Image (cartoon, rainbow, N blue to C red):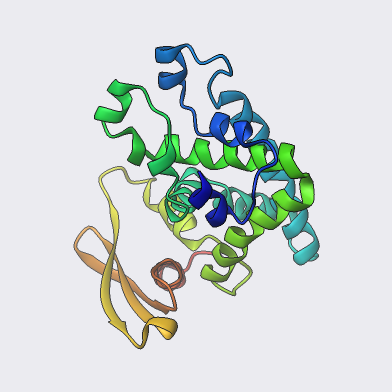
Length: 226
């Protein structure tokens, strides 16, 4: 727990809150933990995360319409993002899981890790208040925003997917075709394929950004409104 608190950059006044945040329902039910599982903390953390991110993007992008704000927030607080944050913190190592859940790979399950991230956020909030919780969240969210394209933060991949899904027999995939530069200044090249045909190519300082740029080029070549 000491090492995890260092990674969280927060020493808990009440370390039981952190323990509760890491307790999955499978463990709580198995040992009949008096403090229960992390589900209530996850519920609270979800709301705290939403208000912190909503407030930040509302102030940061004053000209962005409500629909785009909603999409941007969704991309920042989705399960994929949250479980990547949890993996960075190595929360899986500290989870209290029932024997069956542990044996079946629960420590690497995306949904469990994402819930644990939200529960830990709630624990920080209850232990030290909103400012500390905001500091914790923004350490991750700011980097996620920087990973996105600078073009109004449109989610071109989702727009492209929605168009392609109109034809169920079609499928889209993203292929990394190039990677160059030093570790601190990488440049990635990605192609987007419709079935086996290349329909766009993009570059970026992260794979995510390159995929977005490839999707953007595909949409432009298709004549779609972006």
